Amino acid sequence: MTKHKVLIPIHPDKCDLADHLPEFEKFQQTFDVHIEVLTTSENFIHALKTKYNDIAAVWATSSLYKLGGLNPFIDYLPDTVKVVAFPWVGHNAFDGEKLKEKGIILANIGDSPSKDVADIALLLTLATFR
Image (cartoon, rainbow, N blue to C red; front, top):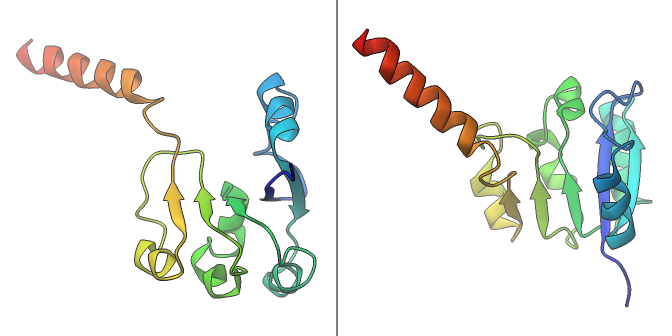
């Protein structure tokens, strides 16, 4: 079975790529991972039109914000893209309507920070009553 191609755009210093973790190695075993070092918007658009014209997903890293975020590139995503995933909470930085029009699912990290958020809410409530 062919692995789905996932594009991970990163900054040249690789600051937001946890490729040293065993989970990333497992991710690479499951998917055909392509890492694109971002230089300019024009180069990234060219890469989307040529060497990444058949990717299935984009893992949106914070490196994209050095080029204005994902929104300026949505129109250049190939028709094969079905998922845009991002490793943080909140989706207001993405043009969800435009992604939806293209048939792309927007997915974040799920409920992994829910315990931390619950802890903060409880501590704020306790602090208010003091």
